[in-house]
Length: 329
Image (cartoon, rainbow, N blue to C red; front, side):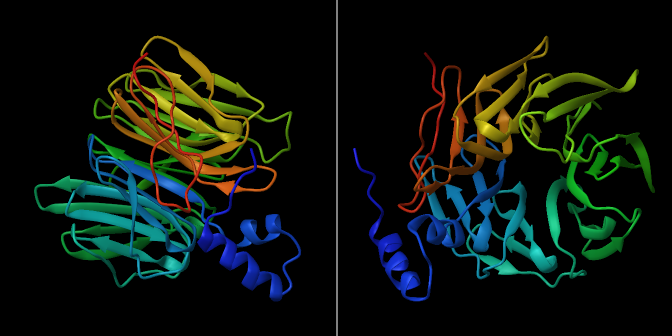
C-alpha cells in the first residue's frame, strides 16, 4: 500500500521544492523532527524532546506536542516532579516547565548541552547538565555553577542515591565533592545510568563503521568496582536506563534494545530501521524508547513502551510515525 504524506508535510514539500530541494527524501530529512531523549517520572508522566525544539508529553493515551518557544535541538529532558521539568539543548539552552507552560531560563553557558538530570531534594531540585568542552552545569539552592573538570566532550549524566556520574569521550567521571575520572575507556562513553543502591552502568562504542561496530556495557558494583559485562555486536548503544534495582535497558541503533533482568543480558531486535536514541522507565512494567526511523521515503519518530509482552505502536501527533508499545502476551 502506498504511504501517504500528511497534509502539513505535503505543503512543506511543495514550498521547499520551489526553494531547490530535489527529492521528497531530501525535504523530509532536512525538515522533519527526530526525538533525542525521553524521561519517565512515573507511569503517566512522560516527556520526550528532540530536534527543532520539539517537546511531547504523554497524556495517558497518546503523546501530544507542547510549545517549547525555541527552534534549537533539545538533547535532554528530566523531571523532579510533574511541576518541575527541565530540558536542555544547543547553545546552552535551558527550559523549565511548571506543569503548565515551558519557559526559557537564563543559562550560565553558551555551550551545547547534551544531557540533564533533575533530582528532588530537601532544599529543592538539584539539576545537573553536561555538554561541550567538558562543561558541567549545576543548579542548586537557587543558584548556578559552571565547571570544566575535563577538556573533552561530555555526552551523558545520571544521578541516583547521592551518586552523580558523567560519561564522555574518555570514560566516566564521578562527583564526590569534586569531579574525578572513575572509569577510563578506550572508546567514548555514550550513556550512563545509576540506581539508588549504588550500582551504575555505562556504555561505550568506537567511532567506527558498521558492521564491525561492537558496543561494550560496563557495570559498577559498590564492592567490586567497574568491569565489562556485555558486548553488543553490530550496533551502537545510544541510551541506558536503570528502571529498577536490577533492571537495566539499553537503546541502540538498528532497532536493537538490550535488557538486563537481574540475572543475564539479552538482545531484542525490535525494528530493522529505527535508531533508538534514548530509553527511560519508572519501573520494569513500562519502558519507553525514542529515536528516529529512516526508511526509503519517510522519516518517522518511534516512541516505544514495554509492558510484559511485545512492542507495539503508540499514538502520537500526525507528524510522528513509527511508534511502538509492548503489552502482555
